[in-house]
Amino acid sequence: MTPDETVDLLTVAAAFDQRTVGEGDAMAWHAVLGDLAFADAKQAVLGYYAETRERIMPADIRQRVREVRHLRLLKTEIPPPPAELLDNPPAYRAALHAGAVAIADGRDPEAAMQAIASQARRELEAS
Image: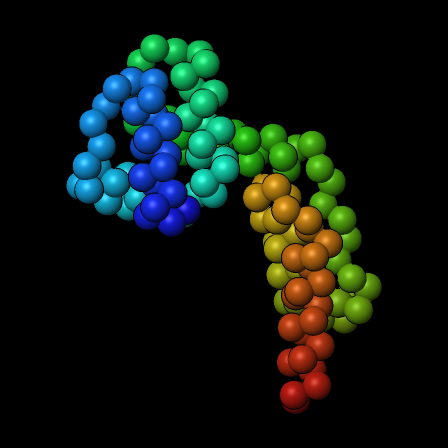
């Protein structure tokens, strides 16, 4: 999430709890939430306020995003990496990891795995 998206996220929260948002708030929240995807964090804020009247904090958002990522992994099977990586265990493991991260992010695992395969091909050609 970018610093501007963090401000947008705080603006969404402020629409529910009337908090004031200053530059210091945005910097602090970005320090804690900057590694999250904005769409996931925004959905976490909306879901939170659909269930409670309590003021949301960064830990609440991180917890909800962690749960969403976990559910995505539970609901989606990680496809096998490209067969060309069978003779390259480190690249095969990297492709599996990239596929899992892509699923958790809500992205296409095949594309992430193909990127690893392409990188492995380039490294093989360079050596």
